[in-house]
Length: 214
Figure 1 (spheres, rainbow, N blue to C red):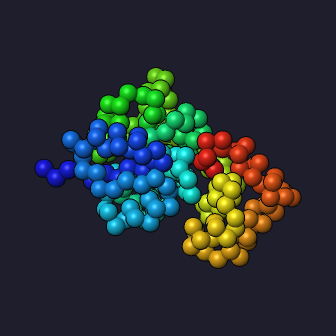
Figure 2 (cartoon, helix red, strand yellow; figure 1 turned 45 degrees about the horizontal axis):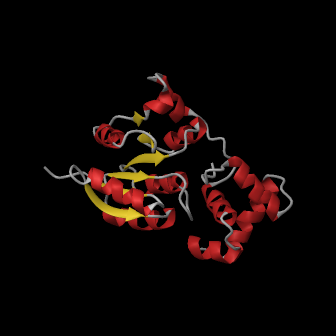
């Protein structure tokens, strides 16, 4: 029987090696990535069935990467493997099309269970998040309206600026012109009534200390 094709994305190589060893007996690992931009650029060519990704990744966080991947590959299953127990973050993950949400501090075997569930079309949420809630929990997550006032591109620009990248560096990473980055930056500032770059960065960190600008 043909094995399920899986991509792993996490900015901690040692953890990825451990996950690879855990999953390889049952699944085929077709690629590993340490940042969101390279994941989005390469995943479609690797044709995975499932992508296991962290939320707090550099250059493009897991939520924004997942949103792009679902547009590029609507049938791919996304499982977020994260330390983030914030229900608002989990809600956003499912709104964007996640099939699973697993906490890193759970048992290692939980990821295998989540993989099996999503492959057969089910939804998996770590019990540490649900605390006995069933049924409407996922439905409410998926039906929740997006709280974000920013577009996906604006969120990408904001993350890179919050990481300390210059507008020129951000433009190179996003493959756009510095003028385009500047446009998104100042559009955000105007939209959010922010008057300085420092205030914009402060806004980014207040919204998401974990690195996922939502």
